[in-house]
Each structure stands twice: as C-alpha cells, then as structure tokens.
Length: 318
Figure 1 (tube, rainbow, N blue to C red):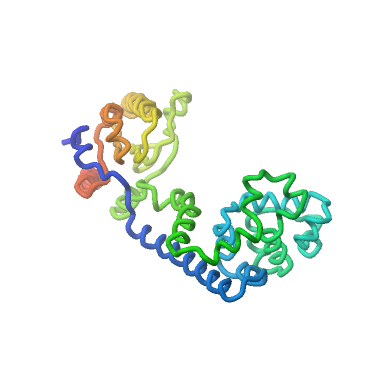
Figure 2: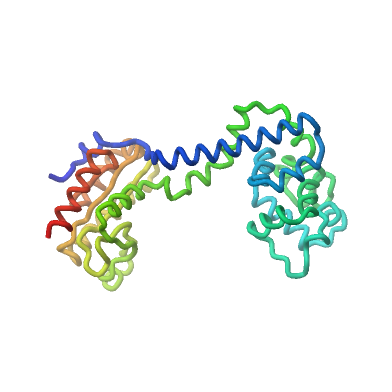
C-alpha cells in the first residue's frame, strides 16, 4: 500500500545523517584543530614571521592561516591577481613577485597550492601579506575596508590567546560550505546505496519522450531505472531542511511531471522521496507534492525497507 501524506509526516527523519561521512568529516575537523593548536603553541614560544612561512609548507597550512584571520581564499587569489597584473613596486616587493611570477603566470587555486609548497619566496610573500598588507597603499585603496581589516600583525597575534572552543568554532564556520556541498551529505546517496546493494542499474537525466514532445516541460530526473529508453521506475528526491516559497512551486512541478509521465510512459511508476523538517513546516505543500507520486517514501528505516521491497517486486521478480 502506498504511503500517504500522514505516514510521510510520521516517518520524517528531520535531518539526513550519513554516520560514516559524519565520522570522517569530524576526523578532518580534528586534524585542522591539531594543526591550528600546533601553530598556536609555536607562536606562544616565539612570535615571528618565519613561523607562518613554515606553516605554509604543511598540509592545510594555507587553510589554517586563512581561517585564523577570516580572509577568504578567493580574496587571496584576487590579491595575488592584483600583484600579477599591477606594476606597483611596493606590492611587488612585499610579495617577492619576481621570484615566482613569469609572463605566463595564471592565478588559480591549484597553482597557489603548488607554489606555497614549492617556492620559499612565494611563502615569504604570502606571510608578508598577512603581516603588512595594510601598509601598502594599493591594497588599502583597492580592497574594501571590510577585507583590509582582516589583515595585519594585530589579527595574527590574536591566535596566541584563542581558546580551543573558539578555534573549533572558526574552523567549523570556515568548512561549512565544504561540508554542505559534499555528495555524501546528500540524501540521494542512500538511494544509490540501495540500488548498488541490489545490483540495479539506473541513469540520471532527461526522459527522451518528454524532451522530444514537451521540451519546455521536460525535467532532469534523479533516478531512471533501469534506463531512460525503457523506464520502469522514475524517482525524484526532495529532502528539505529549510523553508521557502519555492517549495510550493516544487510541488506544482512534480504534479505536472507526474501527469506527463502517465501520458508518455504509462507503464512506468513515478516514485518520490519526500523528507526533511522543512516539509513539516510547509505541510500543505507536502500534501500536494506527495499527491504527485504513485508511491512515496521517506529515508526512515521502515520506508527504506518498503523501497527495497518495491524494487524487488518491480524489477527482480519478473
């Protein structure tokens, strides 16, 4: 029996948690904290620019330096671009430009990560930026005050007295974007895991008949099983932990797509995963999106068992 909106509410998992990923990411955070605290201990013993130059040779060294000041990697790349493109003698001297920059130099994250490990003058230049950038007129007159005020020796001295709790908070704030963007943090990986476990093939992308006949209404599908030419199951996943007016549009879209699937792929079943605390807040939109699907699940243990049974009944018992 297909799940109802009420059962979707009851089985809502609120937030998707991939325990293995969480454990691995926590170890990564811990490694950054250890590097940060090691820097702190060295600076407590002797506060000098050479400590930062040595830091930049280490794994995550540049990241630790950026984290300690709140200066972004993008901001650093643009500052290096300013040095490369300008002929400002003060900035060029500060960054030892002649020791690492040639006529073909292209600024990129990969290039910077390589140079900071291999070129001691580049490391010296980067350390100089964080110590003395506010003394360079071109930087002061070009960068926004908001960014300039993140640089200077005063900011670096704050590292010495930071508590471990503050260090932890700064690192987590810095890594939030990376954490959120990781594929392992996406609930769809749980669907992939089940399909792999049962050795079931799938594809992503547009359904050919929709692309051909209703190109303005076609939709890139999350999972088409076993393939887009002969789909048996078409799966869409919506895991929402925040609320927005666009959730109503999402529901309308899925209802429209469901009708098109019935028209152009009448033998296929349209399956939805609807979960996350955001849908509980927008319960009317949740009821509408649930109505779009032939069957609908959450990522709860009980629903994942039901999903496995659906796969077996539909695909493996022919």
